[in-house]
Every structure is written in structure tokens, then in C-alpha cells.
Image 1: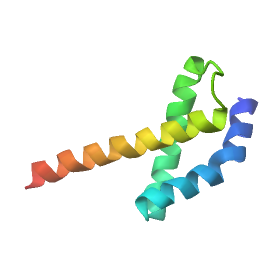
Image 2: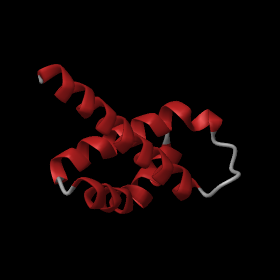
Image 3: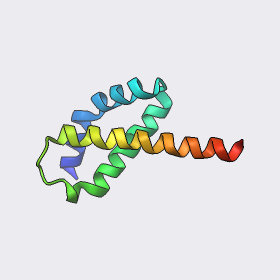
Length: 80
């Protein structure tokens, strides 16, 4: 658990800034940041070290953003 805390402290600010650049919304970026690290914790066993941990986390953040966009599109269609 200590390793995950270190990773979080080391990369959270950079990932948050990245998410802000995608969303332009600090509140949404906070939510996506949390979801990014939840997904990382759940899938840490799949990380083989072929890439840098930072690259891996940014990839998770990017796909978390994509998933949000897909969800939002579906919600908009349901409301239309």
C-alpha cells in the first residue's frame, strides 16, 4: 500500500493537469483523477514494467476520459 501512496503523490499533480487540459473543468478532473487511480489499483497486477509507470498512468487517465465521453454521449441521447 505504501508504494501506491508514493505513486499517487508523485504523479497526481501531473495527471490532474493533463485531465484539466482535456476537460477544462477542475471538478470533473478531480473525479477522473480518482477514477484513474482506482483503475490503476485494480489493474496493477497487469503492469509488467514494459513501459514507465508514468506512461501507464497517463494511458489510464486518457482512457478514463474517453469512457466518460462515451458515457456522456449515451446520456445525451437518452435525454434527447
